[in-house]
Picture 1 (cartoon, rainbow, N blue to C red):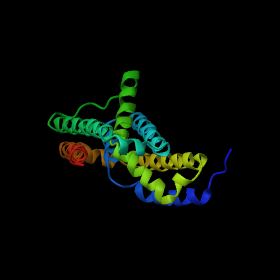
Picture 2: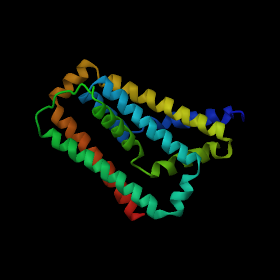
Picture 3: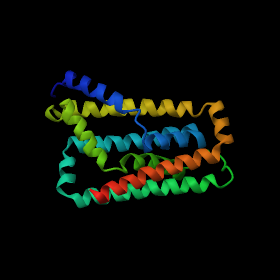
Length: 211
């Protein structure tokens, strides 16, 4: 087995540490799940999200960025579908904001579990541009020139950092004072989160069409 290049790994880790807290759909998704569902849902949503990140990072390592560049229609299709999904989530949240607070679901049924995992997964992979973004980080930090062992070690770093940050957010927004504040301002919170999902989805589609 080829040795892992620890210098490249450390460089990548520093870059990714600065990227992790960047606001985006993944953070919005986990925050909303933590505020409205159970700890079980939070863990399942994060698990699905990490599966999506592993897929995107692996595709970046295997050169799918070049494929997306070579076939613009493929990137356009993925971005439009991903943007449409974010728009759907946003509209659904805005609709919920106008209704009475729904009960917190226990999430014990297999169907509900898979639905929550799917929410995390699709939120992660909704933007084909993420492959190009990860590839650019790989290029800057030298990962593309390293061996596959080093490359897949960076995927592990991604998962560890992203999962840790999302679990921290999940824990924070599960605290009782935060949940009481949510119950008080639920309509405004869900409406705001829904509007942000609409923004991310609309921006994704706009950029895909106008490129």
